[in-house]
Image (cartoon, rainbow, N blue to C red; front, side, top):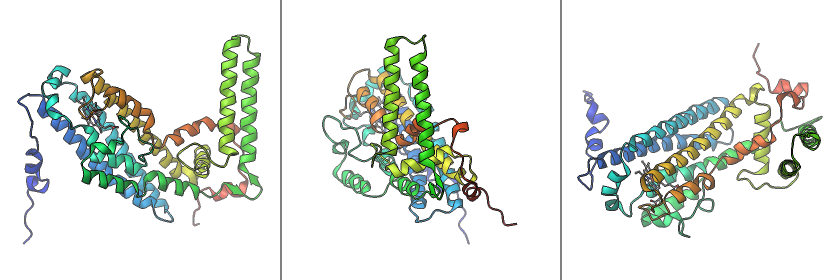
Length: 348
Ligand code: HEM
């Protein structure tokens, strides 16, 4: 006979509820532990979904229905990320002075050593050469030896960023007979930049000083654009080929065949934004709790955390592609056969 399932046993409630072991008698320490534990549980779910997304992306050919599954799971990750922000609000009901009552007991432990957080970073695509260092040392130096080995090994495995790059590089439709997308697109962009330049030069309300700045800005955009179109490689984390495909998807997102790829790119931009927002929110929490004091993990505290907001990004290239977007009305027209190919096909 099948053993009847009992709620508390099924979700291992005893283990979960027996896992809060404060080091002090301070009332707030219980909250401190529970908030950290709940973050870690959600990190676990993010990793579970992330692993499955990487596995689907790693296939040689990805079916439409699998693209939908990727979107569903990325959306779940995005919702979980959003759910994490208010937890910092709850933690801030503990005052900095109450935190100081037990903070020293925690040294040298720190969220710094969250293996799951590092796993999320690494699996998304952050590599040690991209990561911010602390006191001239790799952050891995803060982990126990076994954990260091585990994380280093993880860095040799494929990441979502790598798989995304390969998938983008396989995008069809970019070069089709009788249609040179890049030639027409480049012409339009340069015309737009020229008209912006003329507007600035002729506008009497813009001061001479401001004109110099604005014109330099346009020059920089043109240089970035040249880099994307004419140079062999760009400075980004994604290859030039992958970036160009992503741009094509963003520009022609309304073509039916690009709906799902566009949603994937859009989800990844959300993941990136939320990750950065998480880092910033956490940095502000650290500032509120510690001011300019160093962290229990030995970093410069708020200063260190603030820097990671800009240095530890992963899908930044996708956000930067907005530099090259143009008004919909100016998009080069796709040839009829290509448009048909990119439309929905019905078996009539
Ligand atoms: C009173 C509350 C908190 C304070 C004052 C605080 C402070 C800090 C500081 C100063 C660091 C930098 C490393 C160090 O020197 O220790 C850090 C890192 C970190 N903390 Fe917190 N933290 C708090 C709560 C949390 C919570 C609730 C989480 C959720 C899991 C968390 C996760 C992390 C992570 C993942 C890092 C590494 C960030 C990175 O290197 O990019 N912290 N924390």
